[in-house]
Image 1: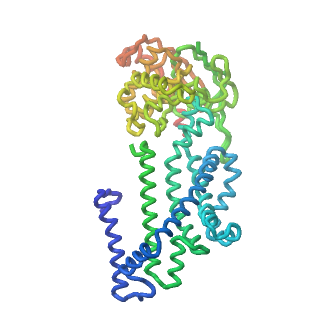
Image 2: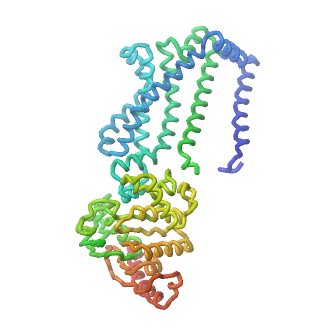
Image 3: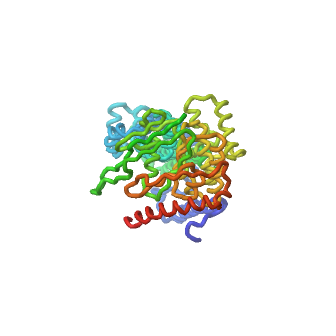
Amino acid sequence: MRPLDSVTSKQRVAYGLAFFVLFVALWSWATFGGHVSKTFLANPLTMVQEGYDLLVKQGFVFDIGMTIWRVVGGFALATIIAVPLGVLMGAYKPIEAFLEPFVSFARYLPASAFIPLLILWAGIGELQKLLVIFIGSVFQVMLMVAVTVGATRRDLVEAAYTLGASDRGIIRRVLLPSSAPEIAEILRLVLGWAWTYVIVAELIGSSSGIGHMITDSQALLNTGQIIFGIIVIGLIGLLSDFMFKAFNAWLFPWRLA
Amino acid sequence: MTVLKVEQVSRTFPARHGNAPTRALEPTDLTIGNNDFVTILGPSGCGKSTLLRIVAGLDRPTSGRVTLDGREVTGPGADRGMVFQSYTLFPWLTVRENIAFGLRERGVPEGERNKVADAFIRRVGLSGFENHWPKQLSGGMQQRTAIARALANDPKILLLDEPFGALDNQTRALMQEMLLGIWERDQKTVLFVTHDIEEAIFLGSRVIVMSARPGRIKAEIGVDLPHPRSYKIKTTPEFVQLKERLVEEIRTEALKVAEHA
């Protein structure tokens, strides 16, 4: 090993898998070896059995579907509002001066702390779940998009002006395309955060979803199910991240050229 | 007929962090006629780029005014094409799309746009690279694309701000010949800023020498070398004589800058 030396893609996969193997091995050692009580931590085999039971007999697929729909719905809502506003903030300094202080403040408001209020306002239905994710994501996306658009290379903007671009042309044909890959990265990042919000939202006042299943299992001291639920969230997150990355690479070939 | 008039244009950058305001450019007069190729020569920090940016409309003069064909310049526009020293191709557009950028902004239909773009791609010797991204091009090829992009807009005047400054010597010499070839063939009004003495003489019909701190025009020297010029002209006695004279002019200015640094 030398600093910043590269690895082959085969090695990369092997190393990455090795850690998962190590993780499961440690877990097996702790549980099968009797070092941790069954009450507190299920062993891997029990977890797999409980998971199979959940999927086949208890309709867990429906819960997974509900959770995914909430994340995607709330996140899409936040994106539709936050990206255009963020672009406007980045492009027009007066708009930024108007919105930035409030958005900076609002982004530190913990989305989970809004849950009691949102239950009061929107009940315990789907709207409340969507709103938690919306509040958790919208300000973050807005601010990060504004910074990205504001940091567009000035010389590209000047070049476009000398080519006769109008103000609208600058936004449409310089600011947007030059920021688009960064914006896609921001969305990928914040989607990850949205997953944490949705589970918290489902822990309180919910009758479906992965988070709901986890609270139910807690009442029954079924740690196998809890761990299975957590692992499912991780896997979905990994998958969505991978899809997002592949989609971005396909969308912006000029970056990789 | 294109006439660019710079009348008593000066630029002072306002005071910052307790420093006194900087006078980048003393009141300057300059007239550039139709199909003139004028090079502005000076050491770094002499305000030559500031002057060019004011002509382009990217910077505002503190006093005075710039007119192009009698109309005052108030901002950047397609009638003044610009090539920058830094690589300013749009990385998300291919070579062809970059060159057609200005035409598209004007609403020229795609078929016609591509025809014009392809003609300029041939002119700057980039055939076969139409669909390449800027990242895949060398520095010289990027600047050739940038020149084609500015020319495709058919501006009244072409402004170049040390466009070959970041290139190696061999590439730079080839680029000079290419640019001069285009000018000799198509005739265009050109204002070219450089700190390279040989480049200023080889390309220009007139060399404007600028002094440093504060920036102002120190001398104006006509270059009566015949066209078309080939690279061989750089070793003729006339060329060398001009070069010697300009070396002296520039050297005193460079010394001034060095003393103040």
